[in-house]
Picture (cartoon, rainbow, N blue to C red):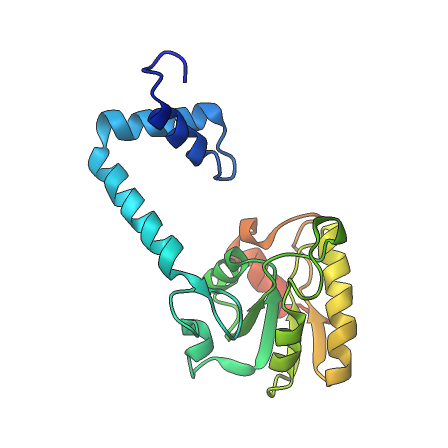
Length: 200
């Protein structure tokens, strides 16, 4: 970091901030300087919460969403519709759909799309667990994955492996831009996409 004390600790901290999406060297430098110059208590609080989250947050044993418990709050909520299972790519997608208020069923989080180049196959996206879930009384599977090339391939694969279970397969409808990610789509658009889903 030019222009400041060239302490290895400061440099290491700036490097650490760059693990966040969209944070380059300059932004990381501003964050580090802000905490050191103006908000050391905030920095300590951030470090404590980060450490706690890294140690205590894992994946739900039922849907793979992030949670501090073995089974997340959504899966353990008896008021949810257990006949419907919405398959999403990331925990951010669950948050986006929940904020839309348009869906009251359960989820399954893939945590990635199929990508042979990156070594992500059926095991990495939890297909075995997904099929177990489908066999537990699920009547409809809603594919709410992105429309990227990987997302389309993943949706096709899931539709093929879940079809023999007898579930009704549907895909969220219009309003999701080509190549778009659910976490960045507004609640109204997501609500309409879920309501207008199409059987596949």
